[in-house]
Image (cartoon, rainbow, N blue to C red; front, side):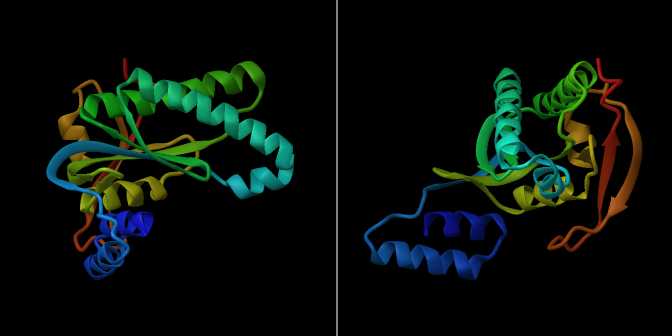
Length: 204
């Protein structure tokens, strides 16, 4: 129920969130405390075409690959002061207090994977989405429109790409270089949003 409550708040599903809170209360369990108005840069990552990859290499190799992937990314999250909020399947949800930390971490992830690919012949393709905005913070993580928007931006990416919202670029370092910028429509977001493809080879 706590997980459902968190998910409902993340997806801005107020009726479902209230129902979960009611069921928790009936069991004598308090819903997570909420701290509103927290500004964060949210990052979502996931391995592109992971199902195809699993089928190609088999279960045992997939588990070994996932362990390496998780260990590598977690070390970079820690290095850039990222807070791991959730880890589901082959992806991460991470929060950063500073947009610059989030952007530099995303670049570090792609560079680490590219270096491993060059040195060892293979590394999984990861896509990354970033958005900066205000969210509600609970004991279990973060909820609100900004989280939802970051997840949707992450889902637009392709192999080895970093997509960032205009809000993240404005809050980040001026040294960020973009390859292209476009307006997109995100499911559940009423207005079009501007996202940019980051040239992660150019950020010093």
